Image 1 (cartoon, rainbow, N blue to C red):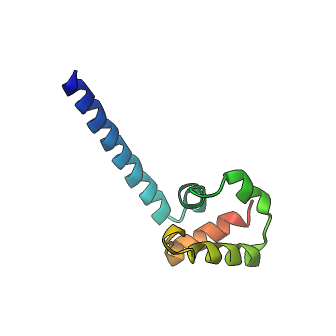
Image 2 (cartoon, rainbow, N blue to C red):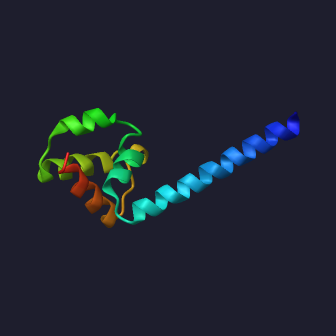
Length: 91
């Protein structure tokens, strides 16, 4: 029974690592929706973000404010930031 449980835990962890790698690959590709789903919805519900209705300047201000939240703010590269902003203005 212990071997089964250990095997299940290991397989779950490997699956998680695989999914993390897949997500990281999508983020590097500039997928603004994936960035939103993995970085922003950690603290905010998707509905709240979708209802905000900001224009580009409003989103720039909001995202920059969130990025400056110290250890809690998302750390985005310039490419990720641009992809996120491109996606946010379409909401």
